[in-house]
Length: 330
Image 1: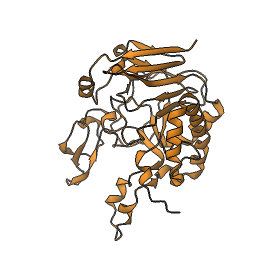
Image 2: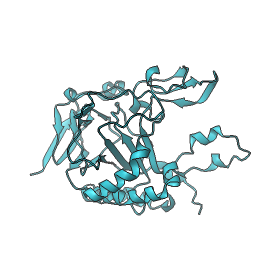
Image 3: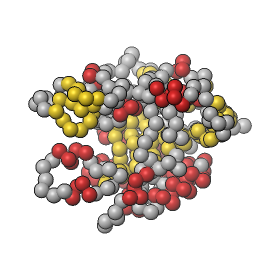
Image 4: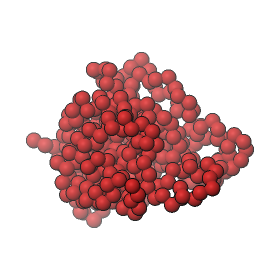
């Protein structure tokens, strides 16, 4: 029999919002689920809403292996644009070229570069998190380049750098997105239908024939408490995990995906599929190596570090809400 949970809030909306950017551990959750489950949340008004659906071992190993090989190098690249998910802004978690923070919010700040000039763009703590597929905002890095044309400011949507520069690798990820889309349709048919109809209106920015425009890939990363922003409100997030294809045994544990307001977390391993309401507050518990490494090396450099002896590569598939505003140009 399928496990089904109906969970009430254990903290108010105000209280959970105050914890944005903070980290959570396994002890912070009453329920840590490692089997097929449907979880419903009961809001402050007593209304029930789907929070998540987890299904174990539904992604074929061959598809996972192929996608892993295509994405692993891109996933390792560090970036500084994840805001609250990367935690409270801290100097020691910023890249070496940041000499100081000028103005800041809790998660982002303008900074002084190595040349002692104040940069106009915001920066967050370093994280190994990248986007693939298509995106509904201009590439912020292009603003730094001198150009006589302002055309780059008028393009609302774009192909991501990975998708553009590595077409063969991108092609190898498509079977994964299609099987994710299949599971999404099976488990959440109404949400899938709404999202697919929306995605189909901008086919140039649609991942094959799926309900997705975009993927976020995260490498060995514990996210802090956050809510996803910028995706289609009536849709759902879809998450899978890829592990080191060369190994047959687990080399890490933890990194459960938790919803602290509802006291529940779930385990997602390679082959599993998770449909989740990414607009609810969520975070990961620590990723714990089961190898000779006793802890994570500090991620305080933009340079490549020695390969860890464990790999958790998560792929989140979704539809960007502003794709609908894109001007179609062939």
